[in-house]
Image 1 (tube, rainbow, N blue to C red):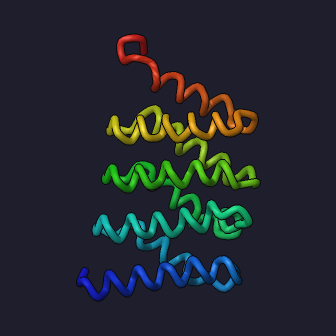
Image 2: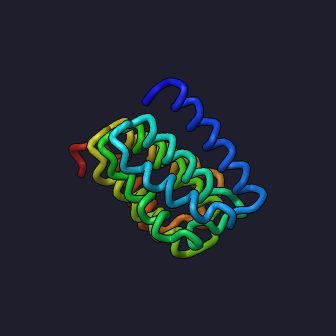
Length: 163
């Protein structure tokens, strides 16, 4: 991907994010295109698509996860991306979905994806980042996180010999 193309993509993603704030339903065809970018071999482009979709799905007033459920499910699947940077980005935005999301369908996929990250991610850095993010969220408000997620944090914060 050329430098000018990369800059153009970044500007386009900023415009899409702003359009979401003003008129989210206008993005009907755009969301599918951005979701398609999740499968590109270029890690930088894939990570940018993950970030943009993460911002759209985790916005406080967003119902994008249910409006575009297939795209949301495909996005949550990036928690198993080959690149650890993409997986780090995913854990950040999945926790924002939990913090701001009000819809059960969105929560279910976010929790399952986060538990995968906490329990099975091959990168210690990704697992520890997820543990820290969940603990920070628990510190802010422990009333809404499900026991399944809290157990995953407990298992992954114990020394390896005790597992």
